[in-house]
Length: 411
Length: 169
Ligand code: SF4
Image (cartoon, rainbow over all chains, first blue to last red; front, side, top):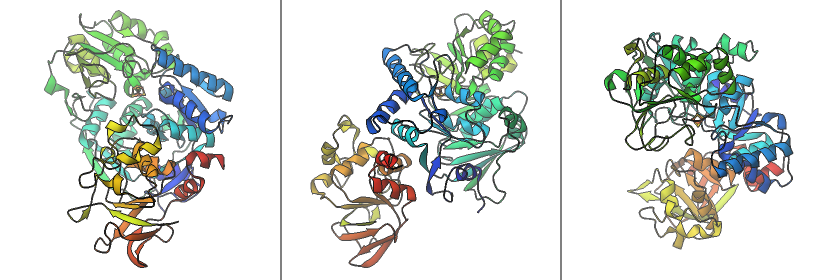
């Protein structure tokens, strides 16, 4: 039978027929746990399989990114529990210096097009950026996968989000992503796999694809898949992309036109409360964060460094920036961008989830208006203030002017 | 697999109740409880019309309900409370995604109803659910249909729970 993209990827990892709605055993290529949830995975594993070994140490990983390096004793304890288990099981740890686990996996080619990846990170469906199936799960589920190398899924139904028109020059992948999130809301794609299509999607570079796929979680989707481009395939040393069958059955196709798109921003406290940046123009802000698994790539941060060159963060505004991985950090350093950013007034932190999770590199206080390039603006997530979600370019322009602004206003 | 027992047909205005969430099944004020045996007494104590369910439930009972059963939080208590009551199985028109994962992993039988004649069955009737044949019967008469169990569910049910299943591999 004809298959959607998600059905094809999962069918290649199953021993029985795979169609939407069916519950089947799926072989897992990459099994991971981060410092959040990792210690519970270890505890559950030890409880149910005393003396047991992980099914395949080469396919099993720990990635410490939530709280890196640990700034609370419970996190430090949990990381040490994972390290000890990793030594005993000969499992590789991407420790507190490495960066955001999902980005490390893409960078190192651990998760690759067509692969299946699970872990304790709820944004692991970011793997859809490279045409892989990724899924965040609870610690019991992950302990089981560590032991058996497989898990079960109910195969999701699929919808197509078809993007018409070209992305205007004034917009970035984040504007496109926020626009789609606003249009779909949290219900349209709930529990479904999305296939993003259209010429503008084909043209996205790997960084842009990561931004789009990272917010499938906020769209309520199981995953948002993009068929890998030549550039993406080359990164993984692959030649041919897995594509959906022509006559595959979709529950719905949603057409969205972006020819007239303007820079987008999500108002607190919902990622889908998306409006044109223009409509909030002039609202004073107090702080800016640039980074996260949504916008912490080399391309995102170079774009910010270029804007900041010869400019300065407005006095009184707290501006923080966190590269996604150590590799990104080193490249920015080597090319001189870190010094540009520091000179312009940004606080640049070590790589990881800082700025998005657990208060690393600061929290917001009551009444504080905060612009973030991450993916969630729920009340309390980054502190007591109000978080707006925007692109790195909008965030940088707003940092310079001390108010919500588009890049066009500083250029 | 065949499940036989006394039916609880959860109705509101003549229809199976939809969207029973985890707070109606097992309210968050009891989340500190960790002993499964203690969970049964609070089952449905926040579900309008069925607050006395736990007092009247008997081991082997079968619960019949509507769409999206168990939506809401990921709490395992909402499954374990039925384990504590020794409920035979839950049959719903559909389940919330996380609830489904929790129930299947803990080896608690959940069945999906595709069709049921609500005029033919009421609370207290003895019913028989055959997950292999996909039938719901009362007094030997067909009154509804079920989706067949997946191989995953069968594997885990046979082993007891997902962790026991792992040991058999
Ligand atoms: S940056 Fe934020 S959303 Fe992304 S993986 Fe880290 S904590 Fe999760």
